[in-house]
Every structure is written in C-alpha cells, then in structure tokens.
Length: 359
Ligand SMILES: NC(=O)c1ccc[n+]([C@@H]2O[C@H](COP(=O)([O-])OP(=O)(O)OC[C@H]3O[C@@H](n4cnc5c(N)ncnc54)[C@H](O)[C@@H]3O)[C@@H](O)[C@H]2O)c1
Image (tube, rainbow, N blue to C red; front, side, top):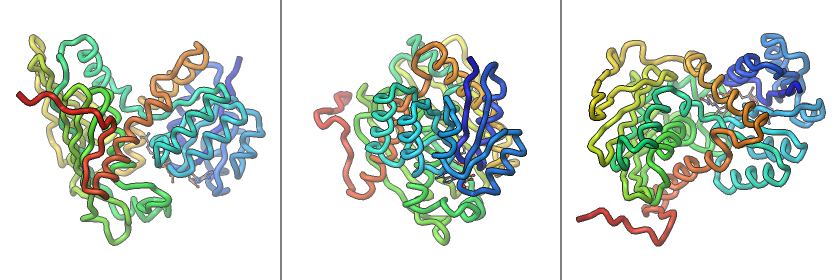
C-alpha cells in the first residue's frame, strides 16, 4: 500500500526529507505546509509536491500516513503530539524537543496513539559511525573508557540573523549544544553507553552581539560503566576545524571519527590490533567554512538511509533505528550541561552512582 507523506516546515532541511522519500518505492510526498505561505508554495513548486497548506491542521486533514517535522525546535512538541492524536506516524528533526519533559510527552502521545516516532540523527548512518559501533558490539575495543568529543565549528553572523528564530532562548532553546553538538553527543552516548554524571560550563564569546544563547561549552561526562569523556564545542572558530570523536577502549585500541568538512564523516584514527591505520584529515582550514545548504547537501545520503529505515520499520512493524526514547538521551545531557552551568554543580542522573574506577 502506498504510504502518503506530509512535510511540515519548508525551510533548509525539508528538501533532504522529500528527496529521501522519493527514493523509496510506494511512498509519495503528497503535501507540505509552512506558516510562511510563499515558502510553502515555492517549496511545493520546486519539489513538485501536489498540495500545500498554511498550517499543520490543514496538512493532517489532507489524509497522510507519515509526517516529517522540519520546523524549528520549540514547535516539535505540538507537531508530534497533534500528528499522533490524528493517528499519523512521525519522523521528527533533531533535537526532539527543548526539554526532556516535552520529549516524554511526545513519546507518551505516540505510544498512546499506537503510532511510530523516529528522530533524525543521520550521522549514526555514516559508515564510519557504523564501524565504530560494530567494533564496540564485537568487543574488539573492549570497554570504551576514555573519549573526547570536539566540535569546533564556524558560523557566520548571517547564520544567526537571517532566520529570526535562531540564537534566542525561547525560539532556539540553546546554542551550539542544542543545535550542533547534540548530533555528536548522540553518537558519543551511543558508543559509550548510559551517562551517569554531567558537569558543564557555557559561555558566549564570539556571537554575543546578535545571539542570547551559548556559542561555546565544555563538559565532563561520566558513564555508568565508569568511563569518562570530555566535550568542547563552539560555533566561534574561524575557520572551522570540524568535529572529532576519539574513543579508547580497555583493549588498548583507539578509534577516531572525524567530520570535515561538515556533513562528511570518516575514520581518522583506527588503532585496533592488526588493523592500524591513521588517515589524518589533511587540509583542515582549507575551504573549512561552508554554508548550511552545502552541509545539508552533504548529509543527503544519510537522510536517505535514516528515512528508509523509518519506512522499513513501519512496514516491518518494528522500532526505527532512532526512537523518541533514544533521542531523549542526548537531550538529557544537553539539559544537564545547562543545569550544571547554572548551579555550578554536577548533575547526577542516578544519585546512587559512584565512580569506582580509582585504584
Ligand atoms: N538533521 C540535521 O542535520 C539537520 C540540519 C538542519 C536542520 N535540522 C533541524 O530541522 C529543523 C528546521 O531547521 P531548518 O534549518 O530547516 O530551519 P528553517 O528556518 O530553514 O526552516 C523552518 C521552516 O519552518 C517554518 N515554520 C516555523 N514554525 C512553523 C509552524 N508552527 N508550522 C509550520 N511551519 C513552521 C518556517 O517558516 C520555515 O520555513 C530544526 O529543528 C533543525 O534543528 C536538522
């Protein structure tokens, strides 16, 4: 049976969704909606979407099976809950929401309605991420015990000022942590396991003339396994140095995943017994500062993989690779970094947890 899809929000990332659905047999993008009417109409024209609307309500009334939510973060909760109540499955862009309590309401609404909720974290679908996850599953790395995640990105002032929702607490919900680093925090916790404690600090150093939220953050994470990780993240680097997630395991092996330029993930260090190679990402700082549309284009193949997984999950009556519950884990860490910054204290997810790895 053909699956009828609607797209909510016709901005930067929505095209990745349409192009991904178009590659799947017996899936049709039948409608799109945006509160900005000219955006909805020009998007419908560009992607040959037959119907366009000015609200979610009208889009849901058009009779769709799946909704892709591609609107700014604070709108995700209402969109997902309304779609669930209309019996529509939802694939929501990251971050799932601005707070874990909002995310929980979304998960509950989908469970109650018996619809599937998936959340876009397409970097999990990079072959490099899959390889790291595989050697953890196969115990080649041993227990990962030390990790570093550096997210050293550049954003122009224009990135924050061209869309009125960006860079403000009420409409963006956060800065580099909530919008960029959450992708890598998702990968970090996917590799390292459940987080036990978070200590964090945030600041606004570069973009303060036009944003309220943080443009830099650091954090120390402890995991329930006893493992530790540090995070450093900024959108204030000129030029960008990209992203690196480096993990050392109890077998003595180290692997590092790099994203450079943005959107393109690759293995940079693979120091695993019998398979050692180092592929330093050469030419960092050359053409480092790419626009959002170039990043979105580079991410298209991975949107294809995650959207395909979501549709396959519906057809096979199984959970998608990234469920709402799974997407809450990185949000919980981001929320804890903000809380730790505000209170000056470590946030303990399990108050009974005590790291037992000191000799
Ligand atoms: N997975 C990724 O790598 C990735 C990349 C970019 C953006 N995103 C996420 O996608 C979401 C959208 O980002 P974007 O860059 O496309 O933003 P954007 O500003 O380019 O587009 C958002 C669109 O939503 C519309 N909109 C706002 N409120 C609405 C509402 N209530 N109902 C209908 N339409 C509404 C706006 O008019 C705009 O056209 C964000 O949550 C962002 O984090 C994810």
